[in-house]
Amino acid sequence: MDDIFYMRKALEQAKIAFEKDEVPIGAVVVSNGQIIGRACNLTETLNDVTAHAEMQAITAAAGYIGGKYLTDCTLYVTVEPCPMCAGALAWAQISRVVYGAVDEKRGSHHFEGIYHPKTVVVGGVLADECAALVKEFFAKKR
Image (cartoon, rainbow, N blue to C red; front, top):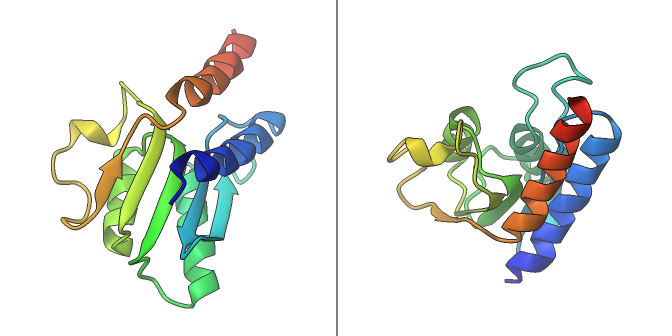
């Protein structure tokens, strides 16, 4: 599994969000080396606080496989999931979560045991690149 390759695919999604004036977070779900779900943050576009990139990617992947469980799948996301997304990933029973930048304020690392017990979580993949995009977005907002 090439975590850097798939994180770059998630970054492509984050750049789409950036262009839409959304907080630039992107996600892809991978199964057996194939991307089965991809999404970016759509909270502004859909006027929906739950439309995080992870939630959209989970929905796309579940639709692709025709079931709600994402066992044997990996989610790549540019910023550490929030508790809402981590909870959804737990319910989906995803095997791995790989994220880029840490979310110091709202990240799931604040909540011990929030993921499914079998989920492996890996952080820091292309962290600087992922964080730079978010920083650039918010710098433009100020």
